[in-house]
Length: 99
Image 1 (tube, helix red, strand yellow):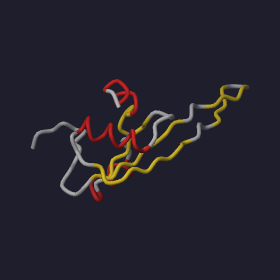
Image 2 (spheres, rainbow, N blue to C red; image 1 turned 90 degrees about the vertical axis):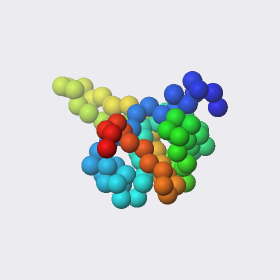
Image 3 (tube, one colour; image 1 turned 135 degrees about the vertical axis):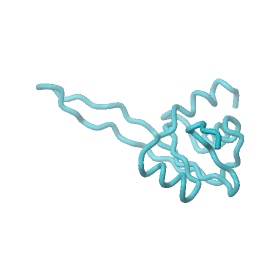
């Protein structure tokens, strides 16, 4: 997989209270990924961009919510979420703080 595709696969880390607890307790990190990405591509992208070893990848398709805009109905875009479990001894630090 080329460098350009790797940057397209991982869109952003999904930071929430639940994902932060999962990262602290069980070395799982949650990413927002491209809708057409598969587990193999996600694993390769995380391993090469963050220089870590990935043990397992789980993906979830999140449907877009139906929202009301005045008298009209609209819908948010659907997106894909990937939960990446790292091998023991590996970690990703999104804060960038040196300690």
